[in-house]
Image (cartoon, rainbow, N blue to C red; front, side, top):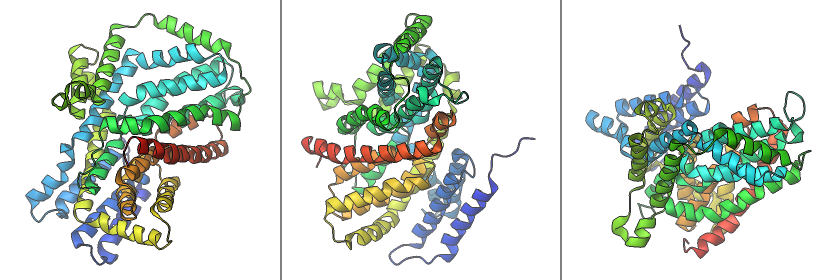
Length: 488
């Protein structure tokens, strides 16, 4: 008999905290009982996610069930179940789910590996060139791989390991510092940056778009193109810096790697010409990027604008019709369906916390405490973002962190006088960049850390250094770029 995938102690802790907030903690002035009870369910769910009491999809089902049964969002049973299931009607959730399915084609056709080896064949003469090749490969596939774990850990990391091994660099032989240590750090620290550059580059990004829209009464609706353009300059600067900064802190023993180009070319030769499936994938990626960027609308007018989620469905439809993906492939993409379920639950709970006034109340508390320091909005935002960012040392999930804190911190920043779009873009960037901090910060971390090339001490040191570099670039260069774009 299979043991249930349940961790008892984290589960009991989450139940205890839920009951404590619900029954014992006093309801603050200005907060309704229903809002407070929903907060109890929400906090309990987040604690369970952090503690990994159950798989996140299973926890989402429990959360939906409890919201429906307790009636914290509605006075009627019919209204409660409608509210509990309302997250499934959010188009952004389906955008991510469908994009994950589409990205399955990268692995199935081998296009992801081809892209990686191609750039290494171009830039692989020096070790730092291999670092840039890995970075460019990540950037190219990021817009259509909403799982940063699949991208950095499932596609780029195996390529990185094969390159390191070809140079005799392995943890088992004590030769990590030859080249593998350096490449592993570059492999990892590019991942948070590419995740910050596109709405479709990591699963929680659409949740951020939703939270910003809710907080501003839909006055600010960030499109795929708006996000990509805003992140373009700071993202490219960060990508340019990562291989250099890592090289300066932890230089590899092997600095010249002419054999890497030969190795990459040999792998490409083994793969042969681009297959039918790869060509279709390239065409679909081009189609998605053109439509997501809104190019038809720019050229021919607003009547030719396409809904972002509808475009994702179009891409999947093309892959199904052409046979590149089968319906069985779609059904087997468990991560996509898992994401749709847990994302729907978290979006639902966050939406009703906002509707019931709880987020506004908490943001007022945060805002008043920072306001007492007497700084202007610019300094206040630095403090706010820094707290939001470095609290991630206590999180093993960006989704849990964003769900728990983003809305309140964004609302607090608005109350302190920060320009809404500037603040939203800065917090959105921070929400991915904070992945750099620890070896448990996101799903990609344990994969690359687990390969053994980098010690925990080196990982944390490099993580903190890159956090400072990335935040500075996003806040200063990004802020100036957004000013030029007229975003604030």
